[in-house]
Image (cartoon, rainbow, N blue to C red; front, side):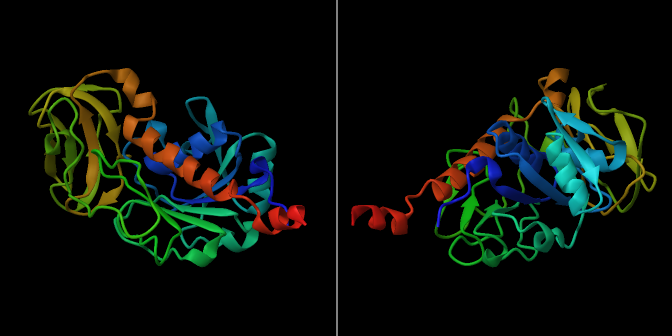
Length: 281
C-alpha cells in the first residue's frame, strides 16, 4: 500500500502551549498543515504570545506568521485547514482522535508524566520529555532537558528525569521563574513585555505577594484571574531585557520542534518493503 503524501498527513497534538505550538508551527512551515491541537478549557500557558492556546481566549492568534483558530468540532477543524490555519479545540479528553484519525499523535503537554497516551492512538506516537517510554507507550520520545542531549530522538527508553531547574539564561535559572507563593487567584497589573526590577511586586496570589528576583523583561505571564495552586509557574523574566524575544519561538522550542519533524520524516520516508520486493520480481 502506498503511503500518504506528506502534505496529507493528519497531525494531532495534545496541548497548545509553548512547546506544542512550536511543534505545530514547525510542521506547518514544512507544509504538513493538517494539524489539530487539543487543549483544556482554561489553558495556563506562560509564554502566551507564542502559544496557540491563546486563541481560546482571544480569537485567531498568530505566532511568527502562522495563525491558529479556535474551533468547536471536526467540521471546524477541516474549515480551519482550508483557510491555511491550525485548529485548536477544547478537548481535554482527546475525543477528536476518533473523529479525525490522525496519522501522527504528539503528546506535547509536558506534564512530566504520561496522562494516558498510548501507542495505539496513531501509526506514529511521539512524546515530549519525561514520562514516556519509547519501548512501551510511544514510538519516539524527544529529549526536552536543556544541554547536550536536547532534542535527541529516543527510540528505546525514556527522556531524562525532570530536574526542576529552569534553563540557564544569562547566568540565571530559578531566579527567572515566578511561582505562586500559595493557592488562590493570581492578580497582576503587569503585562508580557513590561520591564521589571529586582524586588518589584508583580502581583499576588490570594493576597501573598509575587516578587521579582532579578531585573529583566517579563517574557511570559499567565492570565490574571486564574486560580492557581502553590508552586504553580506564573511567569518568567528574561534577564537579557530584549522585548522582541517575547514574540518569537525560543531556541529550546525550535530544537524540540525540529526533532519532531525529523521523527515524522524518519517514519514516513522509510522504504515500503512490500512494494520494493514486488519491484524486484
